[in-house]
Image (cartoon, chains in turn cyan, brown):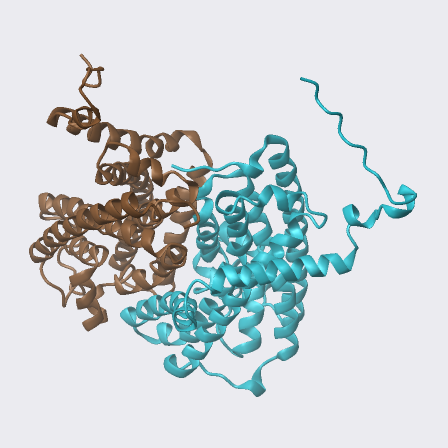
Length: 319
Length: 292
């Protein structure tokens, strides 16, 4: 049986004039913003519309609050002056950590969900905006939830754990500057996790948490780095989150123990100062953050290219 | 001779009428078949060594250093290490048992499970056995390396009871995982979020890093309801004999009995729940279908 030849595409006029080249190329920043907004809305609905607002509120608060309570009870079990002194230190660290965990996991979860469950990843990859913008949008919802959880943990600490809070004593400049740079660094870490998840099987759900757990040890989140061996402290000082947490803590809790400096710390033994000042904190955060962000962007690009080459974008896995 | 050899029958009803031997053999093969990918996964994906062993070990170490920063007694470090080892099983239960049927549904495999001539409990038992093997490696590494590195000294008088409590804890945990697997299948998309909710809050009420007696009434309720809480407390009492701060909870023999009761109750509920779900899946055809 003869096969009909495909019909010729007919243009109403001159093809060069009627074909809109911007459609495959995208419309520049306007398209980027629209794609991001759409991805963020979708991410928020996926995160939030599975239940009623009350349960969603409990869900958003229970996890970080339980993590903070776990540490508070550990302090209480031991008791003593050291434990009392560390309460504010621990609450601020736990609150910030809730944000770090959310930032790290959002993008990675988006990769796995879109690849294995919704099976849309390959289509997202060929969209004009590419994967990065869409993943950032999908991760934004979780970052928002993380910020909310961090705020609740801080309020809980102030209301029930006796954390000192003086709005007039806060170094707002340091807080805002460090938060902005820290935010970028956390998103970059999330990007790196997404790059790993592009190459991994579906059990990678737990990988961001595993990495966050390891960073928990290295970043001076709930105890000063000085208790770690010095080579481990050096690793911690290379991570932007360490500087971000120290900067935020320094800005919010004036006079709180330093997680970087102090007796036995690598910082003090090298510099001779008890703790880094605000300028040093920002410079170190900027430097480590810039290196981390560039490395993450490179890693993501390599991973995306490898995933395309090996057909990993539409694989479904399990064990 | 294979039990699956073809035999001519008068009709489909007679063909479906299996001997007891065939039923048992098929279910045993199901258990082995479902455990296989999890056990093989140990060798197939090497990133597992980093993400499931090294990084969780570092996470456990974080809590060790909290106690060190507080200059706490050395035995507290032992509490953290035991908690860090047991957490591997809990995570496996909630991520790879509780969520699994829902996940299989999302991937379109669940219909095949319900259509296959086997008991769905055999599938879950296979998952549990594979999961235990997988998680044991992580638990063992955390226990051995952390104990060596941080100088944890175990003082054990009753090894047999300690072993029995450990086995009972796993049985109760995976029994609970089977119940959750059924419940999460019904809850659908909420399952993933609820799994998240079963982490830190459960760590806290189970006394993961501190003696659960410190939580008073909440701790008591956790011991009555959560296998992780009661198992951890019993193991700590048996592994750190003579520590004065392990107080306010039942003796390990009583906690072992609680675990026995939990195991039986959880398995009975899980069997009933999964039979019900299987019936619904076959009758209504919605539970097992993707996107439903």
